Image (cartoon, rainbow, N blue to C red):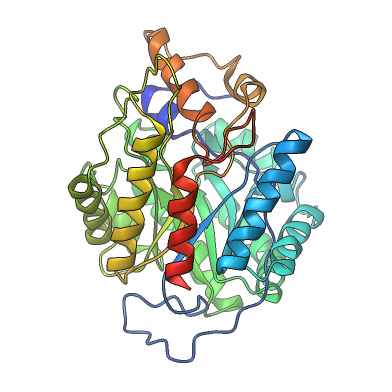
Length: 386
């Protein structure tokens, strides 16, 4: 069931199933210090720029170009990858787990020598993503931290964590962009934190070194939301999504070096001495003519240049995944949002800006497969970090 999307959730609703994932086992860093806030026990030392390819099948020529760029990044020294799955996709029915999608994603990354950050979301930007029997109960008012949900998620972890560890996993994400649901009152921060803590603690009984987190948005650390500290306290590291876009207008906030550095510092402060990972780091390039969001390929390039410079200068920022290599297609946008019941009063220009954002979000153009200037910035960051 599609949720009605508010202005905040529209800004945040960016994640579907990733088609470009898989991973290689990477040993723990023997020099890691458990008291060091930069430490993630299973992640190799240093910072790790990475990206996701796309959330859809690409036209043949574009797919070849995207795979060429991906291979170029791997050859340049990219060392981590990301797997994205909702809970319902691996447990469509109660207790019936389907391993193929997770295993295939992990194997693809392993073949490229990449260590995975694995997302098994119980909540995503559009709402809970539970198996069908639990989803119906949550939509009827059952809390995400209810005992029956916790028991079932622990069973999921019993099934998934050994597979993640067998393929060199270093981190697990249990939710994405819950901030909007807390701010609109549909979820309570204390209940979400209880779910986080339960998932973290059970994961550690299975794999003590596997770090657990959930991804939050700028609504927490940059807006000073009171719920944020409570959520971070329940996690091993802080995971964020960061875009230089005004959430009220969906127009670009000019990504000057000072502005980006200030934002990145705010994320680090909000992490409360825990390591920081950017699950999504992105900036759209905007339409070549008549852009509604006020961005350009040069602005996109500047954002990534400043973001990766800030990352390199701050040892607590351990990984960042560019959202994304290739633009969304018009067909994907229509499939995801064409029949969404937009909240009453949302102006059409806002919907149009949201569309432009996604249709120009890539380091490569969907229609032509050509790279934008930000691609070179990303590749340089990979080389510098290796």
